[in-house]
Length: 124
Image (cartoon, rainbow, N blue to C red):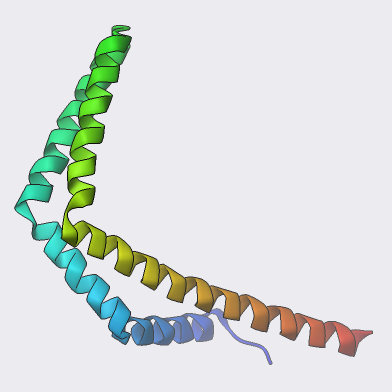
């Protein structure tokens, strides 16, 4: 069976639409939206970005001790973010959605391999 690129793209869109309807994916999207609106996280991310710029400037002037101190401050803020329950929940749902996607990719790879094997057997 021969497929055109448009056929494959249309099928891919169907699969993406079905994936989007999965409960795990829906939950991921809800949590991500909450995360994106979380003021404390926004504030911490802003702090990290400022500190990263500061670290780049300090590094340019060869102030390695100051860079190390700024890096520790960034790590502390990141740890605060990571400790928030919504971030933990986000990471958990992200792992679940990634597992679904990896499973899908594995299934696609297997089906393609099987089809190629059948083609090679016919050609032999």
